[in-house]
Image (tube, rainbow, N blue to C red):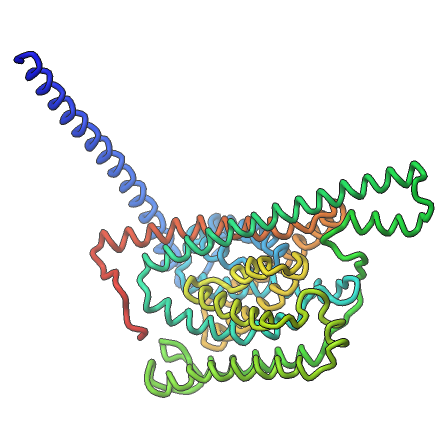
Length: 463
């Protein structure tokens, strides 16, 4: 009995010692992690102090050159998927170049504009079998509610706590990245099967099984390129000017609303009280604007001849009952989340379009077209409201313009050579994965800093 009692006490003491050692090791690891976070915060603050101590002038420093090189790489990758790349530009500019978030956001608007100009210019002169790669009908149905969603998202960004925004960003972008890579793998398998069938068809032709050579050659070609257009011609500008005019009208109406309303610093073309009655009345006009424009577009589609209309739209946007309302809903969701997260809606709407079955090339071209309208609106607003470092922002925009052209040329050649349009899907997934890791990581660092500083971490008022 005494022996059993002694063994029990020994086991009890051993468990206590093991628990204490584990807690000590865990505390040591926690302290090391805390030191690591403090080192990152000190380095970021040092970079910001160095930038602010140069009389508000940006100079060609080593961090700035590294930032430019990384932005060049990010723009070339983003251009292939037709997304803006703001989710990469802002972390690069804030982390490496030491710019504050407001300056980095203004730079990002110019950089996304430069890249989208290159994308739109190329996609307008590249034609598929029947029409341009840009689906103007998707852009028309999406743009009004995307712009409305951005405004709502910006208000939610002010109200929601930083930790909740970081969690939402990680969850949604993580889910979107997973679904995008899953779609890319599905497209890759389809392309592989098509190529395998094409090679089998070629062998049959060589063995003399089929006598009609021309017809078989066309069949083999269609099997080798299941996701690509059969014929691609260049330098043929085919713009539906009526639809382009409607898009410009939508852009101009929302732009006037933004200018009249101004921002929280009372920067606008008229002096109104921030978050006063006039401010909210002007802001609320975006809701009927988006609804009226969307109903006008849907009515115009319905009134046209159905047969001719379906020929113009192709297989992606034919009238299929409730499907015509899918695009405004997706645009509202993408714009709202983009406003909450502080990034463009192109990165968010691209995986949604892929999920509803839009071809990768059409998705990339249409997203870049919509990003062009939203980014130019942001860039012009920054200009009119008096942003700093305009010439530096233009230089970065030129860098992204050149990088986007190079990225488009490389990807188009790779698609033509390999016969795999899934490369576009994978490029979108890569950008989304990098953005998720960067923004979530440094968002978590900022949340940890606020927690240690004892700052308020709850919901806030919109003003």
